[in-house]
Image 1 (cartoon, helix red, strand yellow):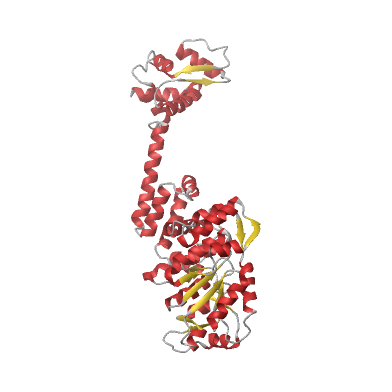
Image 2 (cartoon, one colour):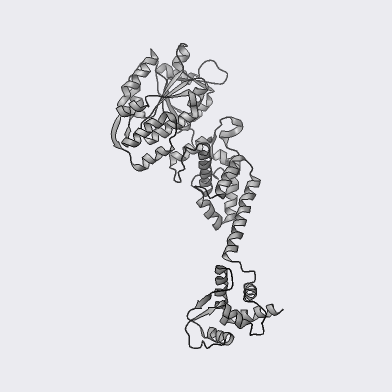
Length: 448
């Protein structure tokens, strides 16, 4: 009863409003009744209120520094004796005043419950890994925590969609590599084909989650907070999500495709072989084939199943100029970063017992690509003119910037480490153009 009367009195007395609000902030800061607050530009009402309660003349003062303990002592000399300043401030604010430490503890507790509720609803391993990464404020999650503070309800709806997606990635269905176009994947998960458009916040959250999973699967795979368009496409494709299956193609020649349960090659691939043609085969056409075989080893059964892989399209064309006969060698070009269509073609070749020979440029990006292929295909792939002698023999004057050299930290494959160490020493790249003749000679040897 007395507390209520005190609260009503101080709420009605405008001369105390600014002071009590400053007291509340001071208590939140210190966590106790102590310290002092300063009021600048005192109003007449404030001077009268302070003079009356504190029994000191403030009538001519422009400012006043008031200690919280002095105010509490003065309160005990009024009819509200027995009421502590903390009680008064709680009543004045209408709820218990929490210190900053209390507020931080409550904030963290609520946040932990927030992540736990999501984990309870999404128990798939992909979801649990990502949510725990977020909870630990791992790399790439700063924006998520900022979004939580801005609008936790909106973030939750976005996270629900992304978590559902992580549990249903097409590339992980029953251990079989499958592929799905991005709009159809989004529609299956959320009923909105645009829900994961990459220029939306939800689309960016999906990319962030996939980047984390990709890095978790392969420690050598770096985390890039600013992916370019090609890198976004490659990341999605790694998990079986295709942005475009027409512009996504594999450049190849001398390879035959076979439909399921058919012993003879599909006419499209056979005709290309008979004409000695180089194909840019779209992903949709590659997916129609159950298996692929080097054409020369299909028609000449004594020939080992081998495919040569080149990174550089200019080098690819130069090499193909040496083979004008219709029985062209089995050669694939990756055009730098490997598209999904090319990976699927290589997958199906490797599954059919084909040995893959890869040759690329000697630069950090080429090393990372070579490492990726070595990890994916294991004993089915061999590095082709990609050793220390080849690097030294093709050394260019192109100096590598420190930012590019730093990418070599992600290279750990034993087959590449010796050359990588040499590159760190010279800080120079080496390119395939310098040993085209040796590449041609190897292919000619195979064809004999």
